[in-house]
Length: 198
Image (cartoon, rainbow, N blue to C red; front, top):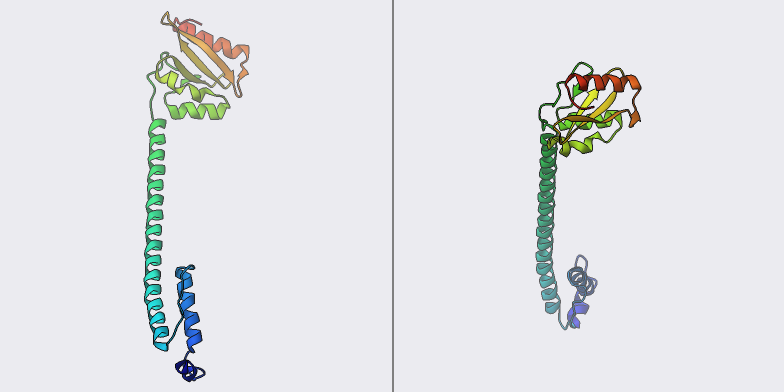
């Protein structure tokens, strides 16, 4: 007790009470459930503070190491996500470049074959129709798509029949609207010229 009284109130010297509080604050930051025993001497208070300081430094170093590990893991995840996104973009570009088989009927200035998935998707977007969903059937040789430019803008789908002929399956303008009779006659004349079924 005399040690405590002797150090209390000396200028520039932290009181044992304040020292103990500082040590307890350090321990509480690391372990809020830490149990403390009574202090019987200043030497015990000093040892308590030294131990709290050492353990607190180790705790801060461990926190910093963990924070670095978490940040490195986040960076690694972001890099993996960037690479996956890049692979997906490359795959989409590769799919878009897929070329279809040569058209079953040669095109004209007015009736133009759609020869790739990218063109098929563009046609669907431009004409506001679902022609793009037929890409697998075009690839399999069951369907073939054409862009009709005149006498009016339309999308033409031909379907391959069991008898070996290509039949007009769909012929519609923007938004799946029925074509004018002149457009249907123009397309049918083109099909007839190639001796294929209408």
